[in-house]
Amino acid sequence: MAQEVKVTEIIKEVQKRLIAKEVLFDLPEWFGIPEYTNDYIEKSTKIPFLAIYVNDKVIGFGSLKETSKFAIEIFCMGILKQYHRNGFGKSLYYKLEKKAKELGYKYIHVKTVKTGKYLEYDKTNAFYKSVGFCELEVLPTLWDEWNPCQIYIKTIN
Image (tube, rainbow, N blue to C red; front, side):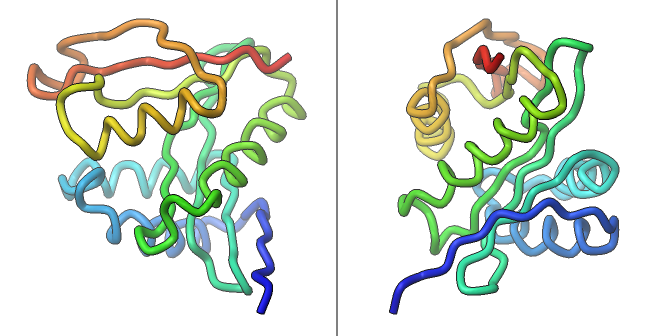
């Protein structure tokens, strides 16, 4: 049976919250600190939010946060673990990029943990590079010394 994949913008805050909880609670390797995870969930309810579905089952989401009149950040993005490495993250990312272009931004960027610290984040970094992001800079103490913040950027317009 062919899988029907669809990415949809979600408007209702309650729906955004439910989707974000389901996805992020499935990803403790990336979102394992409860107060930060809850912050991602709550802040994602107030900003543009896209969900990806496979056969009408939600499997992931991404949210976008304006950082300047020229740039927007992938504030939070996740795909349920059982769906990793099947192209769903790329499908979701390209819809997020399309939304950012529609909103008139020139740049999209994302923060993650610098390569070489954790295997999970090394995979995350490889993902962002695979969709065209370039390393912008590392902020070694933005979060804490164990999690140096890597910022990636991409021109989209």
